[in-house]
Image (cartoon, rainbow, N blue to C red; front, side, top):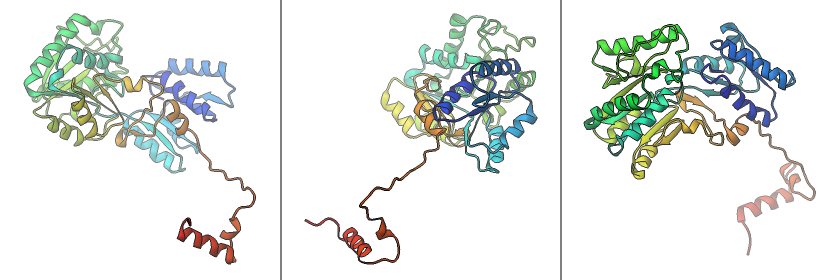
Length: 357
């Protein structure tokens, strides 16, 4: 299970698994050992260990876990690790549900470059400081309104979340390694043609807490690592477009994302975008709400994952529907069995000729 939602993404699917009549074993992330131990205590106090159990350990256990011959395996995490899990599970023909990530776009229509839209996008990006699989990974903004978007972002942070990166609302980056990766993305963008804009004046990274201020990267080139990799942090690239069709072509040229967001006051524009794109889930005029609705099926497509859970979709995902026939009396089963005679001939004739008036 992932480290960014150690309880929600463990106990949520567990409800669906138990509802479908399964037993379950949960392997929490090794990056959140305290949460893993707490989850282990909670489960042990609630369930018989033969019904639900939690096992904790490092990478060696995680690797072995994927190779066990389960009836079904759910993995939530990165596409890179998801591939390895799928390969390991395939050796035993274990069906998998993969909840992965990707570069989730937000397409902002020209009628929606305003404070409300920018607030929704930045607000979602600030949840766990960008460490969320369904956060906005990059924005597509009308070229003529790029500076307006940047100005609105500045204003939002100054007025709504002043000093954000020094407050308890700012989640620390999970590890030094990931923090170094994020700072490397910004450094590469700054050295090339991307304009890096810090939304907090004079804000600095706090290495002791790993709190990192949010930054925009304006019109980055597509060969930058932050445009090729899922960012998973407080960095938001903004790319210009000249027509909605150009924006759609850009999105569709990449891997299919876990989520897609479109902002428009015109429902026909939103429908146009949704009809011509493919993603695991989507929102219109908001971000990430599709992952918060327990009754709405949640999952990815292609590199962003496979399978669905939440609500009835989760029950179906973790069920094994078995077709059962109970034979009654006075049927025509004998017509199917050799030797074939008058009864079989009568059935064939009736089938070919259809009902008679």
